[in-house]
Amino acid sequence: MSGPTRLPRYAYLGPAGTFTEAALRQFAGPDEAEYVPMVDVISALEAVRSGRADFAVVPIENSVEGGVTATLDTLATGDALVLLREVVVPVSFVLAARPGTVLADVTRVSTHPHAWAQCRRWFNVNLPVAVHVPATSTAAAGALLADLAPEHDPGFDAALVAPLSAELYGLEILAEHVADNESAVTRFVVVGLPGALPAPTGADKTSLVVHLASNESGALLAMLEQFAARGVNLSRIESRPLGDLLGRYSFSIDAEGHLADERVAEALIGLHRVCPHVRFLGSYPRADGAVTEVAPGTNDADFAAARDWLATLRRGC
Ligand SMILES: O=C(O)C(=O)C[C@]1(C(=O)O)C=C[C@@H](O)C=C1
Image (cartoon, rainbow, N blue to C red; front, side, top):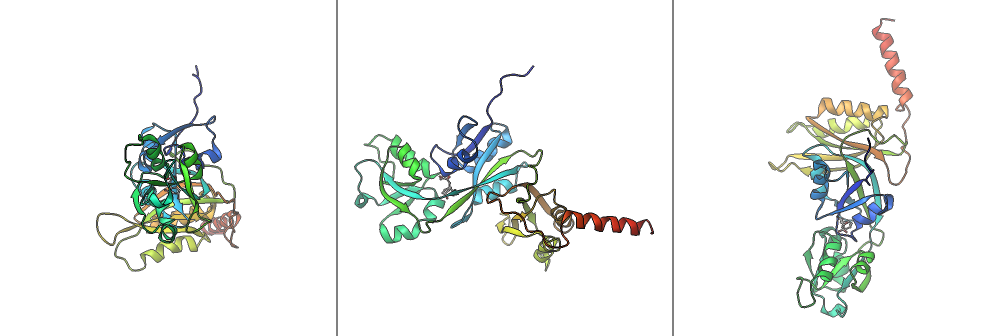
């Protein structure tokens, strides 16, 4: 007997009005998914691990500020999670405050540290007195301004938020197009428990976490060779400290292609041989739809033909 079907539950960096919510809206409207706002990225990912949510949507990389370390580190350790899709959202901020505030009153600005990092030069030029008050998200800062009674000081005068967030929380916009780079974008990932992989599309990425054999000269080269020798291009590689000792790093990698592609599979087999730890974080379609360029000699048929040839040799023919 089947019960009533429920909507898939998506945990995301909340509250309502974050860029993360905008990412979620791009592929699942509120009538297609249950939105579960969480206070931070770690809580959103843990909600999937504990079964409280089916999926999480979290920021992973910004074009100005780089990797979102809380996301990279939580995916790299703990129970296995996989990336199922990626979404890219243009990031544009407004400076917003309680009605009646004027720009000259503003000395304390609250927002997410990644948002502040994307607007440092703007503040330096336009509001040099402003100090940053960190918030758990852009919208969390906006919500706090709206929620507290006017006689309560939330600890800041204005919030750096998405334009939609200013509207949602009834804030007045003091400055628009606040940005050091007008074309900034943030990449978000949809995360779930390991299961069937999204089907290959020809425009895919495979994400991995790899550790190197420590203190061995050429260990980084040996790791990179596994990709290069099979014609697998990397679209991102960044190191994160392992945390226990200085000088120990984990590499967070996005490779072009899908685990179902022979060249990617062969590169993973190579990594498994030469690296002490490899965590597969999923194969999923690229947000930009850019079709992977396949170098001569590295398509599936080339690998199959080479394997057939080897089998012939082994049979002694
Ligand atoms: O605070 C938000 O609105 C978020 O969705 C987080 C976040 C981030 O972590 O980078 C997402 C997009 C922007 O780059 C700024 C902040």
